Length: 333
Image (cartoon, rainbow, N blue to C red; front, side, top):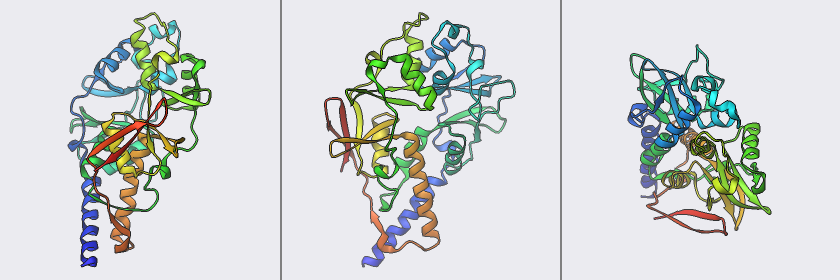
């Protein structure tokens, strides 16, 4: 009986993997694409991104994508000076390789029939978090983001898994991360993010994490200042309390927490101490790579029945303060 049950679980694992990796982009993409013209101002772009609550815009000309404008572009290419009011979207938009936009910009894009596995690998290769989806005529048909891939993991991965590294958050987190002191200010934080090419900075005071400063906060400032560049200090724009998760939970439960808490970054704690930093990029790619490796082992019959264990889906998120400025999330069910 035990052997038959394990065999059944193995088949469920295989089916779940195929369901996730072979899903077509058109099944999970967002049909509503927020676009902007290349000659619009950078401040107009910031207003659209904040107003539409999106992390990026597709730069469109005659229904075709000619570039992408992301939060990262605001970090790396937009100066904190009056020069910003002379910049156009076409001056700072990015192409597939992340370089500054130009007339022959080739946007990272996929067709609707592309599988999630293929789309995920392209995102990893290009170091990007979203892909334009084209229709058969090469026009904009949608957009697929890391968050869409995250949703697919939650909805399509079965109730079983293999307990083997990298399976836990501590296996995929970044144990060393850059932070900024609260007293340094907005300008210093933005410069540090540009220099280190990172999307967020935990904010510290006397060695303790008291907030988090992200790419979105930079974009929001260009929107909130109303053309005056009245850049605020970090305590006025950072988010607090900072959301965190235990190092010992599995990556699929962590994905659920990140998805439903609507965040792209989490601190990682163990025994009451911060031990790492986890981004949605780390998490999504880890989940897909885990499923791909597991699928190959099943296909090659190198997975023993006793290696397969049930991974029951949790149905609730629980949180409590892990310190004055940290709130720890875990799952129950």
